[in-house]
Image (cartoon, rainbow, N blue to C red; front, top):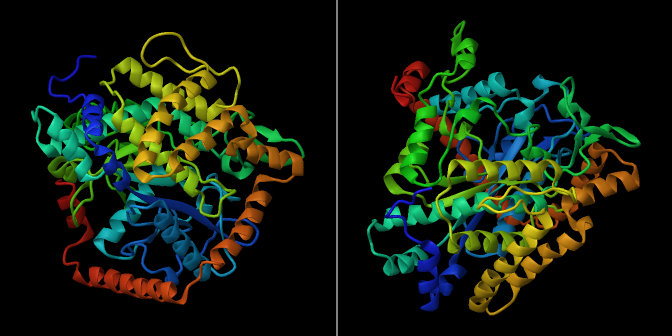
Length: 529
């Protein structure tokens, strides 16, 4: 594909900057974690009660909210410079949630607990303000379009940013054909393109959704097999991440959206177009029927967040500002990795070893060559992601070549990538004065020779050897993790969360009292109808 003449060769600029000591900037990476988890009752059924008031308002609380469902919590850390501190905040959030949910359990797996049909997944509610109702109606629309069950899947979103000093040092080596803001955005897009080329490896190493409860596909056609001695558990023998297959976050309608990560303007314009094109099937649903909203609109996307993707460029939006408008005005601030499963064997769903690996992996994507992606390569990387999610542990699996040549066997491609990744790990360790990144990379590389260490394989192995169902194992792990959460209780931290909860409830009430327009007028203004 023809390159833009203004596209900086970031890998060359990185090498020049690194030769002048820019590696110290890589020690100032910031990362944040958003973790989703279902609340379940003592029997492993999805919770039916309201979001606990002890946790505050999901509309206005800065750290504890809900995703699609009233039962699907989302715990959000602030950005942290150090991996230990981000995990400390995540543990504190878990400890407070555990305190507030009584006898309920946080489900540790990505694939949901026992469901009793579509309507057993309660749609999240955010109060009577126009903003709160808009969030609720958006979720109603997702129900009409895709069903609630798909929305009950949980995952980890990993937010990652390189410091401004890194981009300034690379910019100093460039021809300055772009502004620093546009240069930084182009650098993040280069990272994203490389992430898409190599993201299949994350599914292989960290995929942990190789089995699920039968109720997830109840009454639907599927290709899954019953697990021997556990007919309520379904699996695919070589899968790594069923969450990222057509059983999970997939939309046939969205397949017509050809998102390009070559230029920010193109990315924004493509999504804006999807926000304006009416989709016939969604038009047939109706927007407001018998005085009640079924969805926000009949467009291909109701809002930007409806677009499913494994990674997103992000910019913190101001109050009332649309995400795409913020991106357009101020450029990319950080990236959000969205393909990570919860590791059910870990109390937080993620640990420090994985954080170090992700930081090294994403830094590697930022400093290595990343040409524009053409149509053929885009299709190949999408196919590779799907293939590894569905049958990544199949010894015969071959990946599609993304830059010409023959189709490599997964293990061969992975070993070559690890050789290159180790160089980045050593570079980052030099500045840190230790070997945490090399150790993190070596820890993951060992899985190539010992697949039993893969979470997807470890999960199935446990279910088979102990003749236990997915539901019973997840329930046991969830109860086991509660002991870990309780060890992090702190009166001072609890008091802080209690204060935040009260403040968020007051903020929601103030928002409701401040509304002066009708919901119809509010939505008309928002969508400029």
